[in-house]
Length: 137
Image (cartoon, one colour):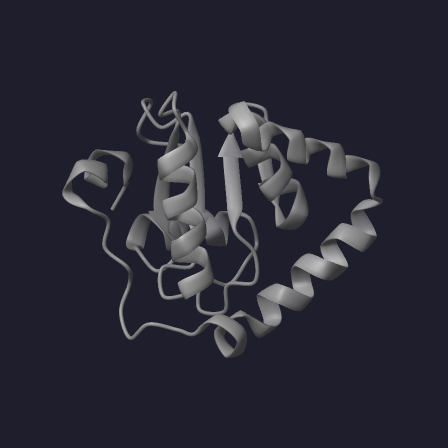
């Protein structure tokens, strides 16, 4: 599944979405163990991985979180991400008590409207130099 063994946890994100870029920056600041790596869905590698899950990279509707335990999407991806990050954000995993169909309904609403609500960049967001090693191209 992953060609880079150092990237055991890989978050695929929409690189032109302002909300997604802000979420990645949040993870970068709070993932103290530095376990999580990142790849834009718009990149060649990201598009390939996204297609392997039966999804269209030209119309991304969910981030994907690829882990040794499997691939997570929508609200499951967000909750698994919080769990892996640990620390103060791990408390979000309590949201698993909410049925998935309700969590995914909210996730899908935000994902569908994210460009209108948060904006869209003309090109993919670029990480700071000190973060570049955690990004797959």
